[in-house]
Image (cartoon, rainbow, N blue to C red; front, side):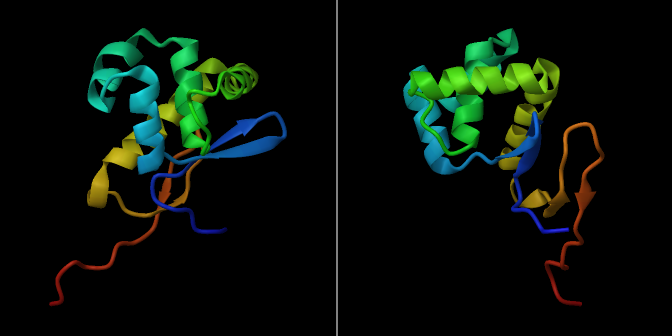
Length: 127
């Protein structure tokens, strides 16, 4: 089993597995696209759970540009194919892992609907 990068989540869409990871460039693209900071986006807009918002997040998490309408339409179709609840859980889990900081141990395998398997963390201070 290959080791994943911390903050990375898998989403199965049809026969393909998409790797979701939100990097700083994606965060900046989301802020530009929504014309608001990430915290207001997560706390005020996302609770309404608009498909277009989930599509923009999915695009950013797969390395695309949320402002690209074609990419958002493709992402919306992927969300529909994967199942809206399943995709929303994967997006939420990616956000959770992205912003959990150093408190999060490395993710060995993360799949929506399965318990995450965590790697062991080295002690932060020698004894």
